[in-house]
Length: 153
Image (cartoon, rainbow, N blue to C red; front, side, top):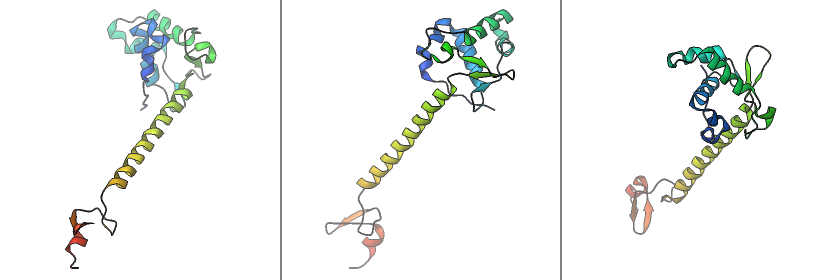
């Protein structure tokens, strides 16, 4: 089973100018990609998936041509803005896979760092007993944990 994250930037993509059927088909292509950005999707698969909506073989081939043709409006200039190039074994390479994989790894890394910093700051600002445990009471102006508070002086 594969998993593909759909980037929110797709909303501003030149792909959207082609209409919702093209964007829907692109999500199918992405859902079939492996960890290296190779997809086993094909025009035939698109037609089978969208057959209930009346997509014909010609529709699927027209949409596939959009994915494999140069797009002068594409933000990615790699391979003239093509989204797919043949891998040579009947499958297709998603041209921007590495770019988005790097972006999402960086975002994940930032999230981990933010969580660690927040945890550190919370620990740094909590009230501590002289033994280093979390203080639960104040006795005689001293912050003490339950264990230290129960000890006779």
